[in-house]
Image 1 (tube, rainbow, N blue to C red):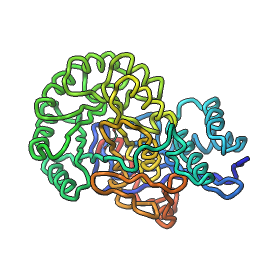
Image 2: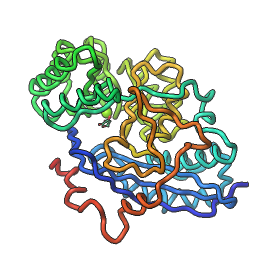
Image 3: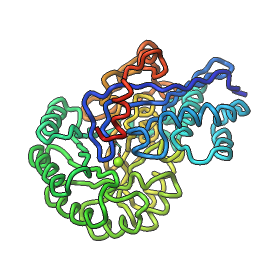
Amino acid sequence: MAALSQANTFIVDVPTIRPHVLAMATLHAQSMAIVRLIDADGVEGIGEGTTIGGLSYGEESPESIKSAIDTYIIPILETCDLAQIGATMAKVARCVRGNHFAKCAIETALLDMAGKRLGIAVSELIGGGRVRDSLPVAWTLASGDTARDIAEGEEMLDRRRHRIFKLKIGKREVRDDVAHVGAICKALGDRASVRVDVNQNWSENQARIGMTMLHDVGCDLVEQPVAGDALGAMARLSKSQTVPLMADEALHGPRSALRIASANAASVFALKIAQSGGLFAAAQVAAIGAAAGIGLYGGTMLEGGVGTIASAHVFATLPELAWGTELFGPLLQTENILSEPLGYDDFSLAVPAGPGLGIAFDEDKLAFFRHDRSKSVIAAPLRHAAATGD
Ligand code: MUC
Ligand code: MG
């Protein structure tokens, strides 16, 4: 019996290397809810719950993730054998509806503990185990300025760090956004794959016009052009447009994956562990997608090192990952809060092979960036700028 001995949840704010401009928010820092669980034998498991722009992206915020864990999930864990991850998470699911990001952080920590106890990597505890040791990684060009994005793309190509670029659009007029994408496609040519994410900001009509124009300027993929619950519009666009449509905000775990697949509403799935409700649920989403002939892409919520590596362990178990991943979150932050840098090299991220997640915190950096320390690193106006779009 692995009983819970200690649990600690806190929020860490790390500044971003530049403002990250999305349709619904501009990030100046990333806030990550970190959970640390220790069992009676002293084995620690770590997890992360991270969302984007406070409550502007989805229904959970760093504060709600922490509160759901502290108030509702930890008391359940106190009654469980933490070594039985499936049974523990089933009990959590019976008592807590929704709250996918909070559940994912907990499941990550339980898997980290289990892997450490067994001496194997988390990827070996998912599906049939890992089938790859490294993952292709995209970078998001979202400075808000075309020339700066082109310079950033060129730098990433020169450094052999990324050759897949996602552009965040949906904030400006459709034709202005397409001009921006077209300029970047032209500058990078066939040295890179250029894709866009509209983050639900177009109407169906705008999407019809926008997707046709995007195809013409050389864009390879359009992510969530319309609202995530507009499955009819997604299906009509998928049928009428040549450029593939990727579902992101529409995906909230296996049931939504089945609905999207049944409605032919997307030809690519952005897999996200937190949005799916955990690592096992993300693997189920992938299985539904693969069975339906839908291409798979390893998505991110711009997590830090823990959430990124938890995602990497899941994506490493997928035999088909036609569209690569976008596990670049830690590179968008000014500091890495892990004790060792992650293995970004040759357009890829190495999946750690050590027990559990195979990573550890840099305790000093973690303490420095904690939101509840006496003076926060990110002043409140900047944290809240995300919500006001400033
Ligand atoms: C999203 O909507 O996919 C992924 C990359 C990025 O810049 O934002 C995220 C979220
Ligand atoms: Mg997206």
